[in-house]
Structures are given as C-alpha cells and as structure tokens.
Image 1 (tube, rainbow, N blue to C red):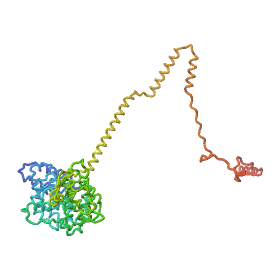
Image 2: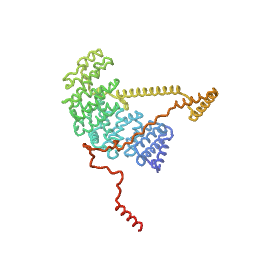
Image 3: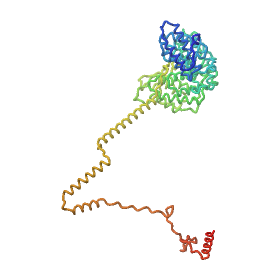
Image 4: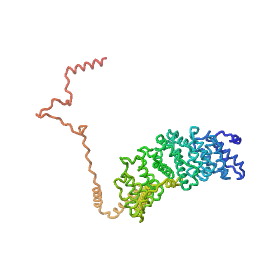
Length: 559
C-alpha cells in the first residue's frame, strides 16, 4: 500500500509466514500509532501476497486474520486497529487487500459484535453495496466474502434508514438474476450467500416499517420493500429463488435463519400480487415441512411455533392449496387438534396465542367445510385455561408487527423432539448394554473363581499316574504274598473291565458309479437279450493264424 510494503522481499511461503508472525508480534505502546500503522501495512501486504501467490485455500487468509487477532499488535490497542481496518475498507479498491480486510472484519465481527455495529456507524453498508453490485465476475471469491460480510453485519444490528434508501431495484434485481444463473461454486450450488442477503434485507425492511409505525417521528421518507416489490413485478422470472428458500427451510436447523425465511413467506402469502409466486408442487413440499417442524418443536419454543402458524394460515387460504383436490387435509386437521391440546387433559394447558392462531387456521374455508370438532379456541380456552375468549379475542390479530418482532440470536440451533427422543433411547440402550456386559463379566469371574484348580501338564499327570500305580502294586504285594490266585483273578477282571470295541463293518463299495448294483436284465419269456456280454477269455487261435504269426516273428528276427 505504501513504500514500506515493498521493502519486504518474499521468496517462498515459509518465509512469508515467518515474516507475518514477526509483524503481528510487534510490541509497542498504545500511543505509538505510527508504529501500529506501519505494522498493519506490512501485515496487509503479506496477507495479500499469501492469497495471490501462495494460498492453497481460503482458510489461509482467515488464518492470517486470526494471527493478527491473537498477536501483540492487536492487543496493544484493539479499537484503534479495528478503526484503521474499517477505514481501509472504505478507501481500498484493489481486490487483494480488500479480500484480506473483509476476511479480518468477518472473523473479528463473529467473535465481537461491536465490530459490526461500528461498521454500520461508519457507513460500511453503502460501501458494501458498491463493491457487490455488478462485480461478481471480477473476483468471485471476493464477491462471496463481501456477501457474507453484509449478511452477518445486517442481521446483528438494525440498519439506518439512510442505509436502506441506498438499496435500489437494480441491486435487488441483480441478486435475483445471479440466483437464476448457474453457480460456479461446487460447494454452493444454490447461491446461499445471495439468498441470505435478500432474506436479511427483507427483515430490515420489516423492522424499519414497524419502527416507523410505532414512532411516526422517525418516518422521514416512505420506505419500499424492494425484495417484495421485485417479486411482485417480476416473480415468474425468478422462481428459482422460491424453490431454494423452501429447500433451505427444509434443511436449516438454525433458528434465526428459519425465522428469516418465514418472515419473507408471510409477506409473499399476504401480498395479493405474490399469492401464486410458487409452483403448486413447491407449496405442497412447504406444507409438509411446516407440518413436520410444528410437530417436532419442543414446547418451550413458543415464538417459533407462533411464526409457523402465522405463515400456515395464508398458505392454506390464499395460495393454490385452497383449490381441490386439497392436499393433506386430514393431516392438517390432525395437526391442529394436537396443537390445540384436544383430549390431552394430563399435559400443561396450551398458551392463549397458540389457541388463537390454531383457531384462525381451522377457520380456513376448505378445512372447516366438514367441521373440525374440538379445536375451537373458545372451547379449549374454557376447558384448559378457565377463561372465556370473545369473538374478537378468538380472531387473529396477526400483523406484520407480530412477525417482524420475532428475533433470535445467530448460531442458536433449533432443538428437536425426535432428536432428543433418539438421544435418550440411545443413552438408555447404551446403559443397558453396559449393564449386561458388566453382569456377564461378573458372572464369568465368579465361575472362574469356583472352578479355579491348578492346571498340570500331561507329563506331570503321567508321572503321578506311575507313582500311583507303583504304590498300589507295592500295597498289593505286601498285603498277602500267599494268595497267588487272587492276583490272577484281578488281572482277569482288569482285562474284562476293558473290553475291545467291536469293529465297524466297512461300507460296501457299490458296483455301479451311481450306487445301483449291476444286474443282467432278461426278457419276459425267460430268454436272454440278443446283446451278449463279452467273453471272459479270448477264444483259442487257429493253427494257421499261429503259424503265420510265428513266420512273421522269425522274419523280424532275421531282419
């Protein structure tokens, strides 16, 4: 960036990292701003060289950013270092240094939210708009990183009205067109960084509009939601965006991102121009996802459950799902009964807001044609809560204010009833298996102790047997030497005690290879067959033949 940058000569990657670690380890006083500025310029130059010449992945620049955060240079005066890097973002135009600056602000902001707040105060949102708009082809990696930085910054802190006024139709249309095109990132085929930016912009518009409604003094100029406006005017041209947000809702486990998607869906299903923005099959998939998530949400996540119910009503009432054949009608009615707590007298009562929202969904025309008994908000409230709801209270007072007010910290994962049940079942199965294994080991140990006798080798057994036989013979000889007949009888008895095993007859070998003995066959009249068996011995030769052979032999001998 300055002359001091070029004073460092880098020949290989190892030397680069050594120099970078020396720079971030610079020690100086907090008042030595010139020394800090020189060290920051050197770090920015080295990190840029790392990406341009030696980087194998995007993690290398992130590691360089983390090394600055961990080094002595940053801890000398963190606020001054952050301010200098933010000013660099506002002034820098080169892709290499911009990538390093954006990487540092993203890493630092995720660890310290005050960084994103400081960026908004310094006007970085407008600068990010300029860097993102129309520059994807210049450096796709930098473009994706700037999108991530805008998303993280915008979902942490409410943007200023003047920041949102810088967002025009051209910028939003540009993002939608990128989603319609093919992704050049194999790890991101659905353009999730772009989708997240559009979702967070929609939330910022909703929060700004509700703030202006609550405090008219803040409404300095009319504010138009550019995201909903673009889909209202050119929705059929950007249907890929709708498909991708449904797919994202189906897979997402982070609560804050689910809320961002639900807020946009609510506006699309309550805006007449976008009632039929989605394909019918996509709406059916969305209904399946909502039913599954509502049944899977734990009881303590009331705010997220209320948001799902607020989206469910316009989805069933305003979109193509209100046309026959009605998709999943029985499943929706069963879901409403479960959420209203019909028949569940042993569980905690359902909160009033859930009852009101369930009653509103139950009043959808094609759901209430045949009557859904037992899920009315008034009846359930009287049964479980001991209160009476008037018709005005039972009717839903849902508005954009209620939906926009639901917030959750980034990174919080949505718990799942199914996952918790599976984890408990797995823990019980594991404990049971461990108990059975311990019982088996204990039983085996007891049996080993009970049957624990010293083992002797075969030679020891033979020696002990010989000793026993010799001692027994000595006893017999010394017992009575005048009775020879007794020893003879004992020998006979010992011989008779060990009778020889009878020999088993050998198996008979069959005379035929298939096991059937050969037997000559005869005709019915007792005569033999015309086919004769070969003679056992050759017939005697004739004398002439014998003489001929003798003559031949003699001739051969002569030759």
